[in-house]
Length: 195
Image 1: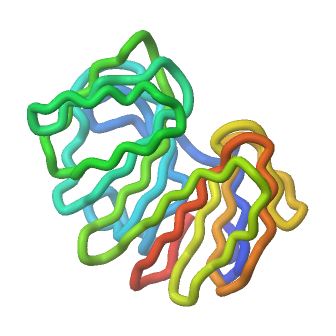
Image 2: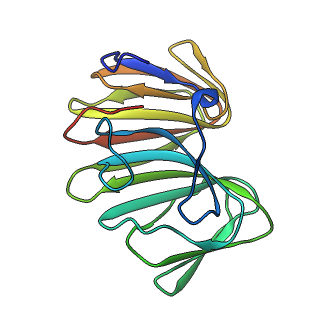
């Protein structure tokens, strides 16, 4: 197990188990979340990648705000509380409430999406997609999660393959050099993160 006090932890995609969805329409792989030991009903924040294999309703997450980003595949149409939103542009985040009745229709086949979920009143997130070299600063009291969504990247000279991540938990500035697109998620919460 990785030491949770490390200011930089590299979270490799190959080490993530796939968990079936509640409705059986796909699988999800949690990248990171908090607090330690929390599940789907009590997390403060949770970041994951999902393989969507079939149309159907999304699981409800009362009191949770969601941002979903298409990474691979032809996309989907999400009907959120009766209004359809076409999510077919790769790497364009779409925000919606997790407690809304949400149904998914695939636009041509399976897909992979990137999910950031925060529980209202307990956590907040800012998502930036980086495609060029840039400094990444971890603010005091925040956690920054980097996830390589396309291509590869390096963080302070350490290589990240596609879907690898780095969790930054101490105030500092790091050098990110993506060869593709890397998600930079700044998360604010009251407790320490977990893998």
